[in-house]
Image: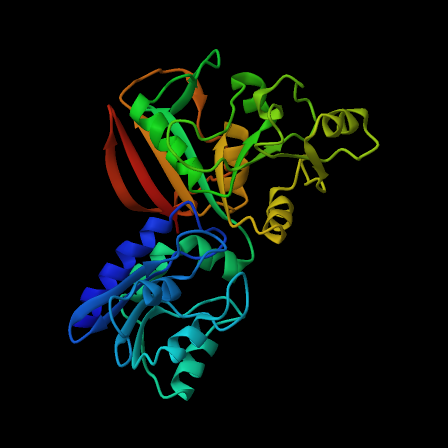
Length: 361
């Protein structure tokens, strides 16, 4: 029970790194000696000290003979920082309790084996499910070699994201808009279709909370984005990638490139539009581990029909429109047994709205 108690503290520490460490995992560490915490640390930012090193540096006394609790297997390779296993052995830690094994092929059990070879007692699997859930993005990225995809949209109680005339600003409350900006800050990139850019002209930045601006990705098969669009402004500060099926010789391609946007050509799918799975593969190679899809309905439908979504965040406003634009289009499901199934992780109030946070299963 003591091991679980201290691991829970390490998990809470790890959460402090949300929005700052990607594509690295969230990690927390606690050092315990004689039933007393003498050191705490967490991975604060990408490229910064790992949790174990931070805890060792923050220790209030000599850590020799103590127990280190860490939510993820200590790394054993040289990256932005030296291997954590070296610091652990150097400081004569006697026991290491690990939440879960690292899926990174550069680590995966090698850190554990090295510590054991040095005579350190190692215990794994303490609150493993909680530790894996904390890093669901990291594990998905490592194991599937694709970004973790979150779909988010705001809808009325009767499932409309806009009126019949296309008006959608604003269905949700001010509190939910703030929540959306927080969600943006927690993802590496935000993806929308050209239709959303043309109709709503969003900035797709983080303004209502503190946090980094995600990479903006616009799916525009026809490259029909107006140059005055907000996503094409301040490109030196917030990068925008436009995915299209057009070739670099196309005048539209050159026009957008000349104003500072990065335009990439993606092979077309059977419908003659950008193949989203190929796009995700390319983004994964660029170390984009998480993507927030904010619309519109065509992109949301395409992501779902191609089984590319991992998480669905639905903001439900206490409003009824009747006729209007649906959040999700035709998924070609004609048998109820084949319906997309969800596991609801969290239900919270947000101003007047209700937010459902679920996972595709």
